[in-house]
Each structure stands twice: as structure tokens, then as C-alpha cells.
Length: 128
Image 1 (cartoon, rainbow, N blue to C red):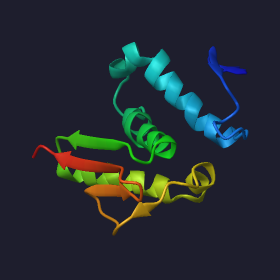
Image 2: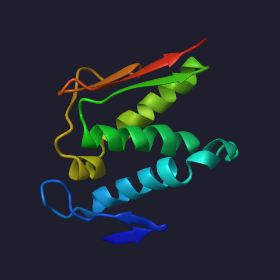
Image 3: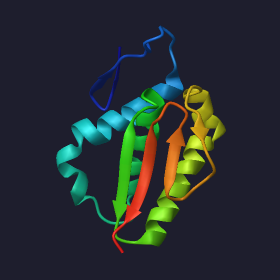
């Protein structure tokens, strides 16, 4: 057991292997969504709220359950396309493939929807 930011982390994965890269995703996810949840919206603009709250969280969740389903809704179409593209970049990166080798992205590259082989997806929508 390891403590990071006073959070107890189990270094062993379900398959029994130790994966310290997975630990990085896990510790950021737990810090942001369990320990700092009540202060999340008080973070000022341009401080990586979307990067941590959408891109890294969704990437981590799809890595753990490739059947998970997400929607990203924003007020601006260009912003939605930009963030979906950033998520694509993370999901296709060699680092992510090393941490989560079982996640397979299928279909053509789109800025509106990302689908996994197992049926999971991320849909992007804009209000305007």
C-alpha cells in the first residue's frame, strides 16, 4: 500500500501485476474526484480543469472499463472539437497504449464521437 496526497493506493492490479504507470492515472483520478471534489469549481480559468476533469478522467475510465459511455457537452462547437481531438491524442499515445493495452479505438477519427471495440463511447455535443 502506498500513500499519495494522504490517499491509500493499492499497487496491485486485478490481474496481480504491479503497474506504476496505471498508478499515476489512478492517483490523479482519486485526488481530483474524491479528495478535491468540493473545491473543483473554484479553480480559476486556464488551470487544467478540463484536462483533468474530462480528458484524463475519461481516458482512465475507458482504460478500466472500455464499455463505459460518456458525453461531453459544451457551449461552443469549436471547443468541443478541440477537446475531443485532445482526448483522441491521449487515447492513441504510446504511453496510454502501454498503460491500457486492451483499449481499442474503432472507426474513423472523428471530433464528435470516439468508440471502443467493446462498445464504449464518448460523444461530444455543443449547445450552439
